[in-house]
Amino acid sequence: MLIILETARLVMREWRTEDFDPFHAMNRDPYVRQFYADHNSVQQSRDFLARAKERDLRDGYFFQPIIEKASNSFIGYVGLSKIDFEAAFTGSTEIGWMLRHDNWGKGYATKMAGALIDHAFAVLELAEVIAFTIPINARSRRVMEKLGMNHEEDEGFEHPMVPEGHPYRFQVLYRKRRTASGVPVTKTAA
Image (cartoon, rainbow, N blue to C red; front, top):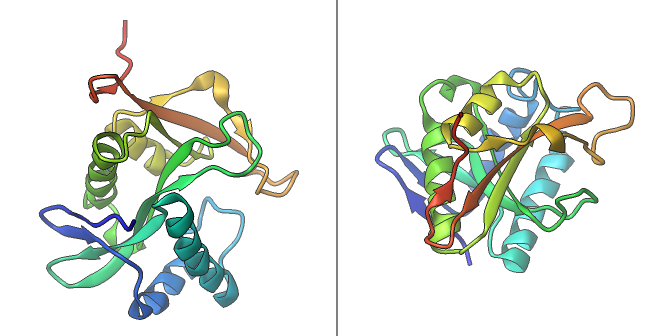
C-alpha cells in the first residue's frame, strides 16, 4: 500500500530508477549528513531503497521520494517507518525527512510531513507518530515543533543503531498523538 500525497508544490510518490543518482548524491552531501554518524556508500544507498520496498510491503509505508512539481526534480524524501530496533518505543511509527541542501528553508519538509501526519491519523489511523534527532540539530527540531510535535524531555535515549561512544548516539524524542476524534493532541504552555 504505497502512500501518494500531493501539496501545492510537491508530490510524494513511489521510488523510481531515476531517483537513485540524486538520492545517493544527497546521502553523500556533508551538509545534509551533518548530524548523521556517516555518509552513505553506494551500497548503503542501494540497501536503503531495497529496504523501502520491503518495508512498504510489510508495513504499508516507509520513506518515499518528494518531487518538486515546478521542476519535476527529486528534492529529498519523507516518510513513516515502524521502529524495529530495541527502545522504549519499539513498534511505534517514526516520521522522518531528508532534503537536498539546496531545498532547505522553503517549507518543504514541514508541508509534506504535515500532510503525511494528517494521512497517518485520518487514513492509517495511527495513534501517534514520533520523531527523534540529536539535541543540536536545531533545523529538524524546529520542523518537529512546527508540526505540533511535543518534545518528550524525559524520553531521550541512546540510539542503538549509532555506535557506542559516538557523539550522536543520544537522541531527543518528539511525539504527536491522535485523539479519539482524530484531532491531534498538542501540549500547550501553562
